[in-house]
Image (cartoon, rainbow, N blue to C red; front, side, top):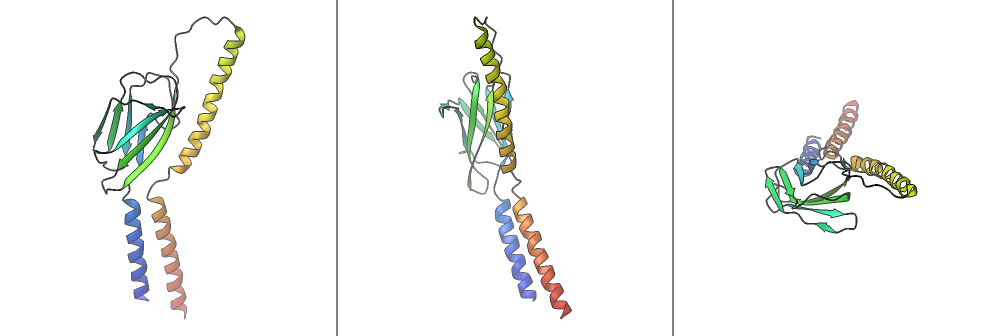
Length: 182
């Protein structure tokens, strides 16, 4: 009986430590699903643990074209990239590739929208003005759906090992309780 309990504990901690060792994205600026209304010249990613210097990220527009990044700097858990000019209005995806302190490569992505107000020019046709208003109203609804999907997929890295440990503890408790009744 003690051997079974000891083996269960060894497996629990062996798998839990490996799952907790990986580094994930903690916070970003801009955030996932955010609509930026000011000029954007920098993107900042903060991770749950230290990242290696060879880590990088890429900014892609809605057509899949890569936007040039002037400089990427990495300090402990933060990676920052600057752009030679402001980012134009549109939808963007940040794809990051890091190597965590444990040496494992980890990738991820998030999206945001740049919608900086442009100086207004007179509109000659009222129909054009109405169609522009309709298009602007549709964009936030699409981003709300994307945000909900991404929020659901970003669970804390420790959640699964904790659930596994609790389930194993319950099974062991039931097993020990049944053995004592006999």
